[in-house]
Image (cartoon, rainbow, N blue to C red; front, side, top):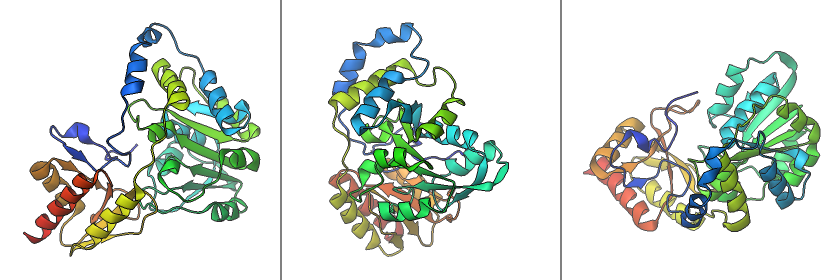
Amino acid sequence: MIKGHGDDAYQYPDIRMNFSSNIPQHVDLSALKQHLATRLDLIANYPEPEALSLERLIASQHGISEECVIVTSGATEAIYLTAQTFRMSHHFAAPTFSEYEDAVRMYRSYAKKTQALWLCNPNNPTGEVLPWQTVYERMSHYDLVVIDQSYEGYTEVPLLTPREAAAAGNVVQIHSLTKTYGVPGLRIGYIVAARRLAQQLRRQMRPWAVNALAIEAGLFLIAHATPIRPDLAEAQRLSAALNAIDGISVLPTQTNFMLCTISGHTATQLKEHLVRQHGMLIRDASNFRGLTPHHFRVAAQLPIENDALVSAINHYLHA
């Protein structure tokens, strides 16, 4: 496991604007908090050994068999469970989320004749999104394709549906209720896969992997909450404003977060300046394989916050 994921605000005492996490920072969670406050009695007993109640609800939502759904403690547990289960020759398209390679490295592969491809779609940290037609074409060349769709609600590009993933036969599709509803502290994710693949994954699971309050939160959110839909027009406005700064370059993005480079300084230097002088947090992206010490990532927040970030970076480079 690498150190240095985004949203490391726990390391800093006074972060007022957080651009580091790709999850929008102003989600109204008051209804969920009120509901969980009435269900705290759940902590006095063990949760379901497997989160079957939540799996049934998710399956019903997508119109697939509950045998094709596995609830996990966040998308990250789904990644490690997949790497543990399928010992193959694994392929990655860098730069992408580092945990894929970390998980595969932890569970050394031995079946070199079988090939697995890992896709992050939308891709973290670039914001690139592969249309479903491209994903289908790549699926035909591998024994297994792992598709992490954690940010699926953060783009308007049509993606592979859970029903299509369950029917494919060689796809493990990873989802994140954490990101769908803005609850990263609760750790709720799930896998969709064909029954055969799901059975293999279940044999590697530990009991009580998902705690009782997380299960309860998942049930409540799916039934009562509205999924996050970031303001993608505002994200494009932020991208253009950053690109207009001499010394900053931004890759095209199809979601709410974007990968940037800074000239003449490192991302670490910029990050530390913004933290100390402005209480702003960005993601130093230098620890993504294939990137450099000059890469950083930001996610669009409220317009007033985005304007403040642009102003702070411009002042840092040209004061």
